[in-house]
Length: 413
Image 1 (cartoon, rainbow, N blue to C red):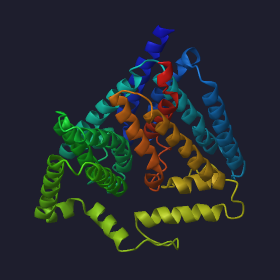
Image 2: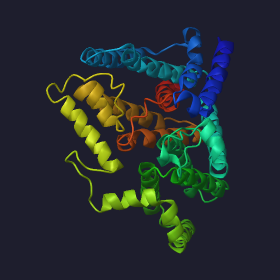
Image 3: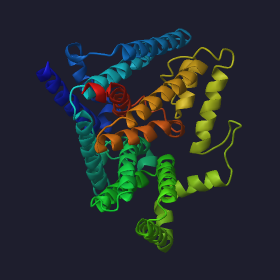
């Protein structure tokens, strides 16, 4: 059995890496990622030989899966002119569940599974940075492998190994949270020699997020950094060297921005315009507003209008309707029960992470699960701008991460 588990672990990590790094060839496939989906599900073939679930998780998983499957079936039955395409689109819930089981099994295979998973994720971040540099210097290669020429909005924004800027920012945000937690831990230990290298990695990931011009993740990265570092300063205000170092960094960053403001404003106009849009109070809740922020609001209002007659039953699969907000997506497909299910599931997920953080675990595992904690607890904010579950690369990452959280059990290792 130990040999089978080792084979599964290696296969899982290999397929995880290849699935996310794989070229999309948008000019040929139209942006569809069937090959990514196929590769990502290869480890599932071994599940019958390695899957062993604790009874509590088994019952919770089966209940959750049954609820989602029932909501999906009811919504599909409520759809007009159901066809094969809409039916297969509704089956996504099946491989979401498989991803969770894959992550659950993987993390129970060895004591170093969390560390190995993060190393694999780290190399994906490195690949995304390398591809991002190629995208900036030789854009034709990026358009061949990943970028969609049909979307003009991508011309001056980074998408790297994904075909959408927001998806890249979503994937990198977890890495940013990881290094932010590591940076804060290093600040609490002034003798830590890795402080500078951790800060550089955090800065590199933030720069990549900035180049995507994803306003949601740029703002969230900046705000969560200010929030967590401020809390640290309140606790350790008696450490002048730490405070002085952060003050110097803040002054340098602010000075650089003001010195090169014209260039910065030209390059990152999309972010600056979005922040100004919010601060000037231009959000329109009438359903007729323009701009990307208002588009999300319009779509949520559209979904609410669709389920107005029966708020407990979804409208359909949503196959031919592009909804850019998780809330619009859930309301349209699953109505009010879908939205309630998301927040209930999120509550138990965050609770599980919090339990793990109180265990006696290694430093690297603690940093990893702290990143998970903030990644999940902030999801209600970043899901305002995209459901992401329609994208195999991101659904693989998100649901595998959920499986790892529920599968991790320090006591039994």
